[in-house]
Image 1 (cartoon, one colour):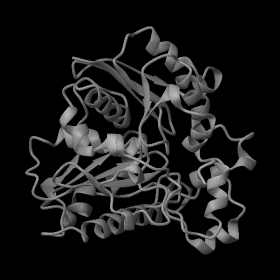
Image 2: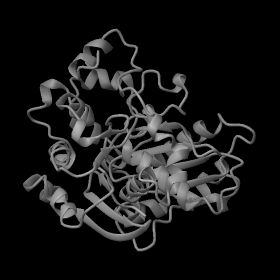
Image 3: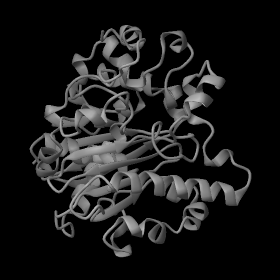
Length: 355
């Protein structure tokens, strides 16, 4: 059975989880200050605990599914999606771009994971003029959710995986066959704790020129009035989940709404005030099907790192292979810029050498 690892380069930390034969063997957390001081610290930690059959490296917008050693500089630029005019001053959250380069040069069996828009199971019409239908960490959380609810999921209706991050909020829909079929990413979906979610085009125009850091601003945390903050966040969740569940027959409800995210630990009082069970119950079979994501036994790192390790195990032919086979990650293709139809889209693609 394989020995694998999974990484999550989130806003608040980079977490790493090692699985041996599908069970937790080791785990670690690297804070942003640590990564800025030494972007290769996670690589050194992993190398000391090898060998590995496969490692799911730190992924963001990323590429379909590619070996880290094969990534070109142009492909690495797609990871953070930073415009050329900002590349000298923006290295990615927590130094993730430098960390990704360290993984590329590590000499370890590292792969970078796809994102929701890469997947063939998401219909083309849902991809038009979208980039963020769910980043790699949200896909990893969805993989973990599929594995963890498998014993109680009847596979008669889709599930919705709702991720409440310390920066962004996102939702991913998984159908009864275990395929991701829709998503609302953190920068194109509901209000986040730090990020403002989907942009009003007029607001974006007036605030332009926008910078990468602007995506991490304007969220619920910026609202001084606590009641307005709570109402805005809760209603944004409802609108997103309601809009997604209305698309799927036969019941137009999800069998389960699975809720996860670091916001539970970072802002427990705020999350408690949302009354998520009652708030989201109309969109699941019952209030008992609005459930918190239960992580792997003995794992304390973020759910996205756990999901990345689950995916690595499945790709290596281990215990979680059925989950990965259902997600069809190996059939992922294209780039996150393929579906832009704006007249200037080719100019953007040239920035990343994809046109």
